[in-house]
Image (cartoon, rainbow, N blue to C red; front, side):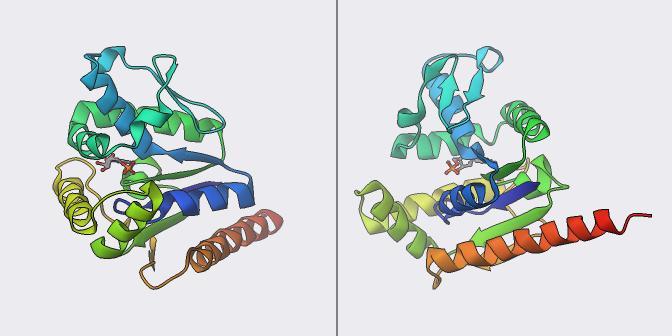
Length: 212
Ligand code: C5P
């Protein structure tokens, strides 16, 4: 089972991904943290060819053996990660790594290009959307700091860069189910997504039973 979740910054991908991973016993992979780890590595003067990123079973991110998870989710890395994510050679390395993980495990993987580029044959593809205002509100709640207007502005800068880059821009796959989350409690989003996964599992079982 491969589940792809894409969407703009702070659209709820992580909360949904964690819930689906628990419910269906899948490995959860936050690919944004990989781009954040690359940005951190560049800040430390490490070249792309010398970067080694390991994702542990419990979702820790090791950069060249060092656990950097707690340094990845800062305002500075929000912007720097989206800048390094425009670089084709960085993307090629990350996609290769992400596909290797998905080859070895059943996964729910979240990012910007999972349904379009990384796992085009994913069993279920979900694209989450919400207004920048609502996403800024959630981000402030999550990080417990920030000015609403400034955070909203920063999210829009990042969304624009992510959507307009030449390689693997942020966009829904043509076969993705788009879930609008603005007016929806998380519980309802999880329930809609779980139904999609269950339907897909039913199809797989039915196909297996009716082979030949
Ligand atoms: O999801 P998160 O906010 O942690 O992602 C950080 C940045 O990494 C995004 O703004 C985006 O530029 C980049 N990213 C990407 N492709 C992915 C995941 C993240 O370009 N699959």
